[in-house]
Image (cartoon, rainbow, N blue to C red; front, side, top):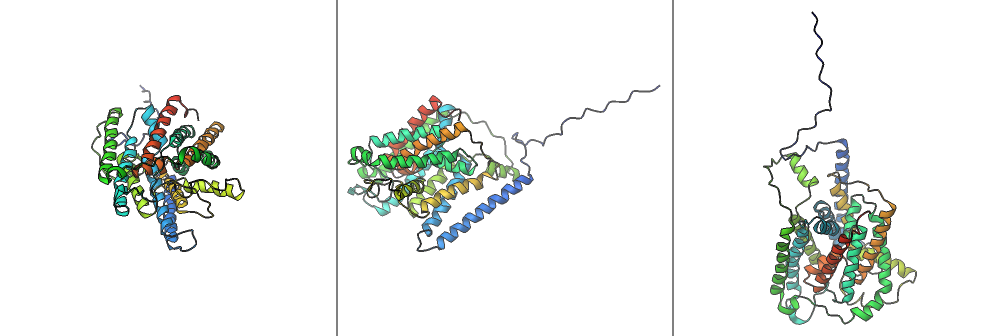
Amino acid sequence: MSTAPVAAPAAGPAPSPRATPEGERPLGWTPADTVRTVIALTVAVALLATAGWLGSVRGDGVGGSAASFALLAGTGLGILFERGRFCFFCIFRDAFEKKNTRGVYSILTAIGVGTVGYALVFSIRLPDPTSGTLPSGAHIAPVSIALVVAGLVFGAGVVISGGCIAGHLYRLGEGSLRSIPALLGALIGFGLGFLTWNPIYSHVVVGAPVPWLPAGAGYGIAVALQLGVLAAVAVALLRWNPPIAARPRRTLDADTLRRLVFFKRWPALATGAGVGVIGFLAFLRDRPLGVTSQLSSLTRTTMDSVDALPHTLLGLDVSLGGCVALVVDTITSNGWLVIGIVAGSFAAALPGRRFSIEPLTLRGSGTGLLGGVLIGWASIIGLGCTIGVFLSGTQALAVSGWVFAGAVVLALGVGFRLGLHRGT
């Protein structure tokens, strides 16, 4: 009596790698990872070598220790922006759309750390803040309706274009092609800002008050007041944060360490603290952080070469603080900072598999260009952007920084509520 053969089990897909205790699959290592890592290390070595070369150059206006420091500081910012998602667009989109304000804590921390650092520098350079003299070099600007309008327009431009200038710079390092028309739009906006500056300055800005918190009651009270406001905002935002799920016990092996360093978003508090420290060191070493000076100088230099600018930009080159654009024929230290941001972001994105060429659509190009124009115009009228005014201005205990920040956040909230960022 014969028996029927037993059917073999049906072939199925190959079993997937065993998940980690946290439910995360092992990262593995592919030939593409080798290529990405080699490129990232090459970029890192090139940045260090360039910084060393800049530090050795003297007398030709291209290099020097300030340029060398700016390149390294920009690289650090690019890494922090990319790994911590220190992006004003992303942070406030999450806050207004998802009611998730965790990213806002990176901004609050950056302002708080920078506030303490700036106060230390101020106390050395200007021991008596009540003397009626403002500290030189800091981004402390007049407070007028022009500053409010600049903040509102800037915030609208951020929503429409998908990022601020710093955000577009670090996303360019991640492969975002949409950042290109946005930055080109900013160059056009700078030009419009220069053309409209003199009448705005003459009718609104000149004679406006320049309030600085330490001028009233000294550094101690000003710092305590500002830190108190930051703490109050942080506490108020706690109720908007979604609950944090309990984390299982973590085994710190090579795979986990690689995931934490290169793949998972860095903690908001650590990211903000890093940005705050770099901001403080930048002011101590050279000048406050800002990303518009070199870029707007490209526009100004081009317009000046074809006599498209007024003979004098009232107050812009003499009395006003901020990211002032000059006529230049070389890369300034601010330019090296910008280069460092893009290169640092690129080097940070590669090992985490986040570098990807973003397709550029007609609609995305148009909104990027339009938003960039608004950002560029507002950066000239407001004397800076989210880094130069929102961040460096508040760190300097300037009321102008808070006014600009409030206007930007208001415009972001309205823009996200209206959905101006969707479909781009």
